[in-house]
Length: 269
Image 1 (cartoon, rainbow, N blue to C red):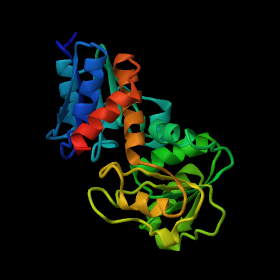
Image 2 (image 1 turned 180 degrees about the vertical axis):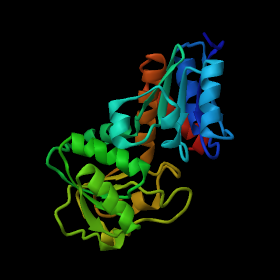
Image 3 (image 1 turned 90 degrees about the vertical axis):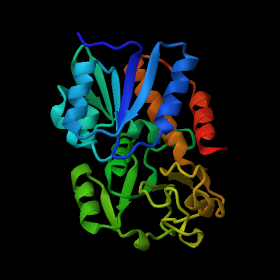
């Protein structure tokens, strides 16, 4: 049976970022585990999964562009990941590979710290993999969700797949519709000063979640704060989904503050 010493957990991405490496390794050090986390930019999804089996990697985080492609190479897909249609976490149990999705866990946990979601009116901007995962979680919590997306056909397809309402383009979002929650599930604002909406387009006195985690405070978050909103930064979702991953990989409970400190160190905060 393939094994490693120390226990190796990994991630694969189209481009290596480095945040996960620092966050997970800090967690393993804090827990006094004989484990290490390494990020790879592989030549392909199949090759990465083959390496996981051959070398005995215990866990693997999966980011774009591999979240859908890896599914065909796994032995089992968790029911939640199957419903979402994407895998961001793979666990190796003695050569048997199971795919999970923790993106929705991170988002819903961050939201539920601030509000109950049952029957709440939620505007979700975006229709990509992260938006799909969040929509799954919102539906699970019995929220009333309307999706807005730049590419209309993708938004309509998502709503058809997951039984949600399509509201149109982000520019068609009407702030005066008694929203309870607004979520930016797009990459707009990632490492830039762009924003999906301006303060004049954002409701007041609601909960606003931005999935973008770099910078730690985005322009969209700043715009939302101008209107007396409760703003949840993207790094909260990032940390919570990573904590859920380590629970699956190594059956450990990671301290949120440990990963937050690692994130701040990486971001220079």
